[in-house]
Image (tube, rainbow, N blue to C red; front, side, top):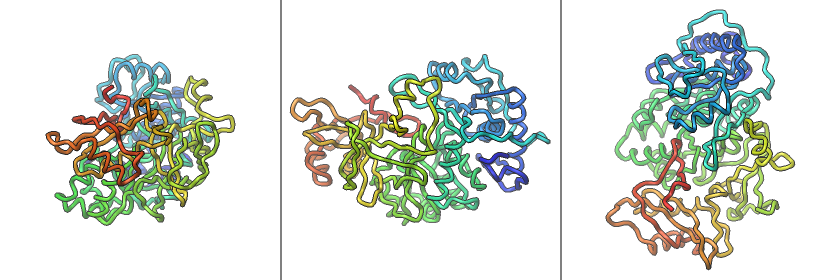
Length: 484
């Protein structure tokens, strides 16, 4: 069908390409369905099309059909609020909206032409895709908008192809692999890696619809080889393992377990490894860059690291004054900057934001801070804006303190921030969800616990107890939403 998906071109097979619950589509039927939809979009001259991105076959067909037509798909989060949705529609100005038949769309989409997606492969004689420039937009994915309205990152076809091929190299990902996941399809993780990734390899994806440990066990025990998830999912898996022998068997037999979108706490790594003998590996990416680093399938799966730069990706750590961090000591902190074919081209309609995001020589400023271990492995310690704490002359990453806190038996969840301190500059604050709310661990106990594992200057000076930490739909802790 397109150079992005060789298995959909020429003579597609009757092998199952995608399965969502009881519904599935073969490569032949997907080629027919996406080809027919692509022809309709091409007839309308659609440059950008909105996709009501529910976890369904129709969403997958809609995105592949848009790519077939040379249109850019704008995946919409069905849980978006009215204000956010109105902003995205105004900013991206899609020609129409693609949705599953029967989906009820919000009023904000009422003014757009709607095409109901036929995911059953009806339609015949659809023309093949026109040759596409590698720089042509494939997707416009909106960022979370934590510091203002969401920005639309324009992701070219070149970035999709190079990222997926680099992951194939790192993970030995082939057409024989069957991926299982329950990720949303309006983010890069679930859509690009979780759906377009298997299609580019000629393999198969099974979407759980709603994540459950029972679903993971069922699919991995019936032929799936890979599992993609976020830390919240792996935490639930770690909690369930003692009571679910089928889950233990499933993970033990999987070829690859991958976590992303946020750091997986070390104690969950260790619980899964102890129960199954298998290590979860991590990778690091973001909307604007797709994937930057990954632990390799044939390398060491070291808890707390996200591997090494992927083929074709340049990565450097930079001090606030612009000087390079060259030390591979696991302690020297710098902002991650990346350069390579995996990058987006621009923020839609925001030349100011695009210019501010890049250095003069083309490096993208990620806003994430990290250290590098002696063997070059990258360890993310947080976001520059919220997770880099300057205390007593030290630059400290919140992530390693959070991991240490999670090793305490009385801590269920933890987040770490900094707040102004007349003496230290900033003091370390731990936000803790205790295992037993009636007997939460105190400040002195947790400070000693962290100091023994890391260093005295990294101990929290303040501990605040919460019933739950605020998280977004990918399981990331939203520190800006913590009580002031």
